[in-house]
Structure formats: structure tokens, C-alpha cells
Image (cartoon, rainbow, N blue to C red; front, top):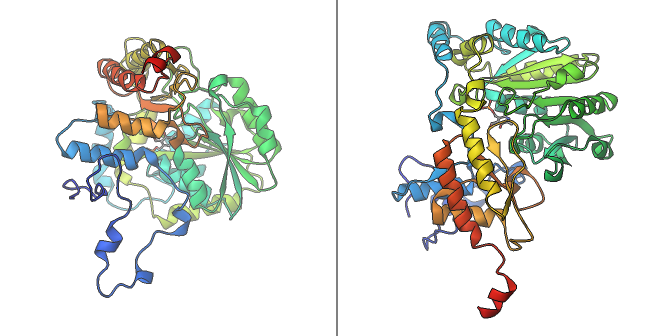
Length: 450
Ligand code: PLP
């Protein structure tokens, strides 16, 4: 069976069973006469526990379905450019103007113009000690997450991560020899962590506390009291505070974003932001990391960050010209999240669909680009998020991400991105409802008749 043209995806299994995908069948086929079994390139052991299901097995299956000519509604990735959201013109123009000056490597920490703009934003917010010298520009926040953890962790060091998390944080922790220790953010508490329970998870090996606010995948926006308590915890236990704030401007209704750096003057705080979401420029691959707060004893770690940044030479220079334009230019996200705006209306369609479905529960997302509805386990006792997602894909050509892909122990949640328009979203939830009704427990009377 052939892969779709232009794709490196794994083929379906030889029987062509659409419900399962053959795992790594290529090694056997590609072993030439000179390649012994021991020299076959097997993946590194440290990848064993690394997962990124947002682009995993289900997404590969979606490619196969598309290759057969069926359109799939892809709700698995928060990629605004795929849903008709343009990068604002003033960012494009800034890149175009800067392109002739983008042909050399720049400083490993990034263009001075970009770092100054990020420092300015952080200082305006009140982040103590934010400075262009302590800003690192990266190829997206993704690269900086890896650098920040790689510079910090020794084997066995522990990182406190929210559950659910954005799975790159778990992956980068494990890849860099660390151990992920999850603090629960429960639906019953609006997916906001209970900080008093978090303290018990801290051990002598704990090195960092990761906060994702506004949150992917839940859409939670943490209240001031929680932010202060998290900052206080990191300060008391001398943990590096890593705050992923890539959705800082994507807020609905009265939600307010609280930058944690402001409340952590005596902790070493790394705040992450970027162009991908608020500025709808995922493909530019431009993000930043701002170091603020207490620098006492932090110089060796800052040197490690600088060394790791230097090893990859620099971030994509062309895209960095858009950073100052984005941070100093007009607010282009609020019109999308305010009533009547496209993101607001889609979120409204999701809220309405979940409210109208007795099998589903939704904690209303207050920020970011996702909803994380749950399925009532009492009404759907046999529900399994992964099996359901595959079923939905096969039956209804809708691709979403099972909640367990975000490192939670339960299997009754689903993540959808809010990026399609409201009409498409209403149709998507109609398809979800149709598939879900098959999972609803058959009432005892009917079961008897059957
Ligand atoms: N952090 C979170 C919480 C995200 O949701 C994402 C992407 O979806 C990233 C980081 C990665 O962003 P970037 O495009 O800047 O690499």
C-alpha cells in the first residue's frame, strides 16, 4: 500500500484495515544486504516515552482518508493560517522591509530591535529586571522550551507540569533527562490548579514549575490569586518559574491575563511569548523568552541558555523583523475575540452545542484557541477518548485530539480548536453528537428488549 504523494506518513497495514495503522513496517523492507539487524537505525531509547499525538497516528490516518478523496475537518492543530486568518499586514510589511538585512546570522539571542521590543513589553507589564540582554529570540516558543529545559535539567531532575499540559513541555522534559511530575488542573475547579495541593509534589529534585496561562488545551485563564500563589510557591522553593504565555492576548468576555513575572520579583522567572497565536504568524517561527526576577546565582544558567542558543547560531532572522511591529503595533486580536468577532462566535457555537448535548460537559474557555469538553462517564461508561476520536474520523471525517494526549490520567475529554468559523463548528458538533449517541448507555428497558 502506498503513502499519499509527498507524505512521509506510515502506510496502513498490509490488510488495508482502515482502523489500524502498521507501526514502523519500513525497517524490515529497507534493510539492504549490507545492513545487519544490529546496525539498523532504531530510534533512541530516550524517545520511548515521548509523545506528540496532536500530529500523531490520528493525523496520519486523516492524511490517508484525504488521499482517498474525502475532505477531513482538521481541528487538531491551533494553526490560524489554515483557517483563513491572515498575519496582520504590518507584520508582513516589516518582514519585507527587513528581508535585505536578513542574510547574515544575527546574534544568538536575536536581533537587538526585536529584543528591545520584547523587553519594552515586559517592563510595561511590570516584570522586574526585564532587559534586552536577557531576552532570547527563538524559532518559535517550541525551540525555547527545549533550550530552557536542556540548560537546566540533569538526569532525574523533576519538573512540575500542569495536567493537562501542552505536550511539548512533557516531551522536552523527558528528552532532556528530566521527570515530569504533574499537578492536576481539574475540570471541577475550572481547570485552575489548587496551589495548596501542589506543594506536596515538591521534592529535593524539583527544579522548575511550569505554568501555561492562558491554557492550552483547556482555555482556562488563571485568576490573580492563583498566579500569586504559584509565584510564591516557586519563590519559597527556589524553583525556576517557566511561564508559557503564548496566548496572552487571546481572552474572552471579562477574562484578564496576569503576567506571572510581575508577581515573582524574587524568583528566577522565564516568560515565553510569540507571534504564532496572538499575531497569527505560526509559520514565521518567531518566539521569545524573557528572563526576569531574581538573578542571584543565575549567571551559570543564563550562560547555559546563551551557549545553547549559540549552538544553533540564531533564530530565523527574517521573521524577527515582525516582532517589534507586532508588539508596538495595533491590537489585532481583540476584534476577533470580542462579541461579533470570529473567535468569539465560534466559541459561542461550541458553548451552545455542548449545552445542548446531555452527554457532554464544557468548562467555558476564557482564553486561548481551544475547548476541552468532557463526556459524562455515567452516561457513556464505555467511552474511550482515543477510540472515539478514531471512530469520529472514520465515520464523520472530523479530526480532533483525545484529551489523554495532554497527559491526563482520564480518558473522557476531547480537544477542539476554535479556529473554524461558527457554521463549520456547529456542523462539527452535530457530527460529534451523532457519533457520541452510539456510546450512550442503552437504557435498561431498551437493553432488555434488544
Ligand atoms: N506553547 C503552547 C501552550 C502552545 O499551544 C504552542 C503551540 O500550539 C506552543 C507553545 C508552540 O508555539 P510556537 O509556534 O511559538 O513554537
